[in-house]
Length: 261
Length: 219
Image (cartoon, rainbow over all chains, first blue to last red; front, side, top):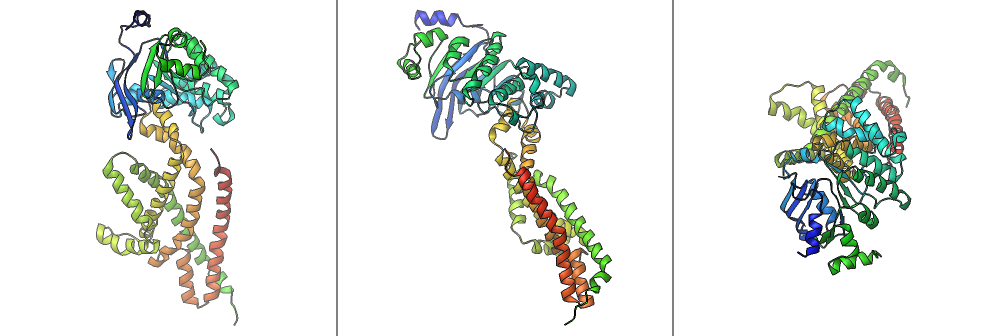
């Protein structure tokens, strides 16, 4: 480890405390294809960690392993120091992690408000009136209080994704997982979603974000991990990864995107 | 050859009784087969191997046996196998129910499979259990999507109830066939029978078309 690395490591938020998420030798195979080849990494409380890298490099798979939407082939995922349960009890851990999908996955048969209420009422048994107040507050937070009674099909992509973020926040998660949240959006609505995410980051939310939005990662992330072919080839603070990448492959990847620092 | 249509009018109350029994049969069988069909469908993908196999065997057996044969089987074999003594109507309902439940479970399975996986995952990621995610997220969408198919199933059941006349359940078909024998006005009675079935089924078929348009091509 170079002196620069050591200095950067030291600079990580809450380094030394139990990480909120840790991966130890995480392996994931899809049939004969090894998608994750033994990942060791962690996310500290209060950090915004961005996962970048070429499509198919394993970023989304790692994110999905984090809340057990994929079963893992080998290694361990620890949440708050505890390995993820391999049985149905994993749902108690999922409650503490919000997940935002590339394709929004709002429930089309429910209004925006009902979508946001669905977690607290179904999972926590929160009384309807209380859940409604909470959901309205969250819709205001993402700027969509006036769309509470709209159905997803009546909303733009950016609006749907903001409702999806509100829906995840309704569970008061300790971590938010974002799986390419802007990849399915029209260019003009990407900004509104990134702004909501930036606000969350500023409020101190711990976030793990798979993204192709390099300027977002550069601006908002505390820590960046670069994936390639199922491995993390480089990680560090954004200033280092974007402006002075240590590995040729990371440099290649960034230059292919036209990133010039 | 002279026709005597008055024979139909003279027996109008018998026909009406038959219509009533047919409606009761169809409604009760459909009402039970929907929850049972959902139950069998859920068993087929519940993750417990033994239950999945039992449910699959149930579906494949009762979907692939001719309904008439099933009616006879329920009539002759079921009492021996179970020791229960059932009325003819109960036997008819059971036979129809076995068949329609098997079909409906397949209808619902197709509906559930048509809902993309991300919907279930979105429910799970909120911390819902599998059954909560099914109940709150997947099934409401799947049922909506299956409505037109259920409607077709209903029309087919409505006409299929006529097979229970084979075990002397006094439905519309049985009444007709009985009157044919007692009055010897074969042409008049059978024509009346066909007309009554058509008059009852045609509006339903139109309703199915309407449901197809309303729910058929919707995301």
